[in-house]
Length: 387
Image (cartoon, rainbow, N blue to C red; front, side):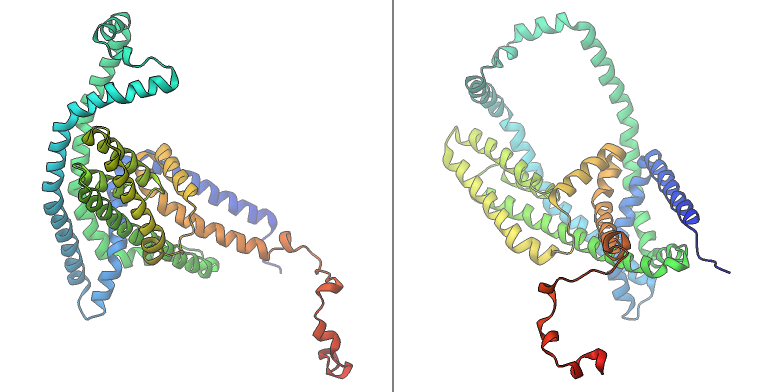
C-alpha cells in the first residue's frame, strides 16, 4: 500500500503552515508592547549563551556560569554608563548653551540661502505678527491639536510607567533566558516534525551563524565607529563632536544612515561654531571619510565578514517594514528576521535548482562544442563502456 503523501495532502499541509504563520503574526502585532522586554532578554540570553557554555566546559555548574556571565554583562553596562553619562551631560549642556547660535544661523543664513536658490518665502513665516495672525485664523484647528497633544501627554505617563516596568523586568528575564537557554532550544527542537529534523537542524545552524556574525559583529562595528567619529570630531575641534559621533555610531547598523546623519549634524555644527569658515567643515568631512574607509576595508570585513549576505536596501526595507507593522518591536526584530529569511531564501533557491521545474523532465542534450575532446581521443578499448 502506497503511503506517500498525495498532492492534495501536501497542499493542505502547506496551507496549514501558512495559517499558523498568519496567526502568529497577528498575535505578535497584538502583543508587541508586552513582548518587547522578552525579545530583548532573549537576544541578550542568546548572545551570552556561548560564554555560559564555555564556562560550563571548565567544570562549573550552569547556575554558576550564568551568574558569572550575567555579572560581567551588568558590570560592562555600569562601566559604560559611568564613562559616557558625564561626557554626554557636558555635551548636552554645550548644546543647550549653543541653541541661540543655531537659531540665528538658521534664520539669518540657512533660510535666506534656501530662498535665493528656490524662490520660496520662508523667513516671512517666522515673523511674530504673521504667526499670531495665522493662529487667530486657525484657532479651532489649533485647539484640536492642543487637545490631541495634551491627550498624548496624559497617555505618555502610562507609557513611561510601562517603559520603567520593562527596564526592571529586563535583567530578570535575561537571567532566566541565560539559565534555561539550552532547555528552550531542546524543547523547540522536539516540536519539529521528525521527517524534517535534518533540514531544520541545517537551517538552524546557518541562521545561528548568520545572526551571530551580524549581531555580535555589527555591535562591535557600531562601538568602533562611534569611538572613531567621537574622537576624530573632538580632535579637529568640534565642540559637539562627542555627541554627534556617538549618535552616528549608534545608528550605523542601518547602512549609510549613520554616516549621512553624522555628516549633516557635523556640517551644521561646524558652520555654526566657525561662523561660516569652511576649514572646520572640511575637517569634519575628512573624519567621516576616514571612518567610512576603516569600516569598509577593515572593520566590516574582519569583524562581520561576508556570511550575512544582506543587501543594504534589504536592511533598510526590513527596518522600515518592521517599524510600520509592529512598532519598536518590529524594528528590534527586523534584522534578525531578515537574516533568517535570507537563509531560507538561499535554501529555497538551492531546492529550486535541484527540482524538475528548473532542470526539466528530460536530460540535457550536449552540443558537439561541449563534448570532452579527451573522451573522443580515447581508443575504443579504453572507453568505460567497453571495459
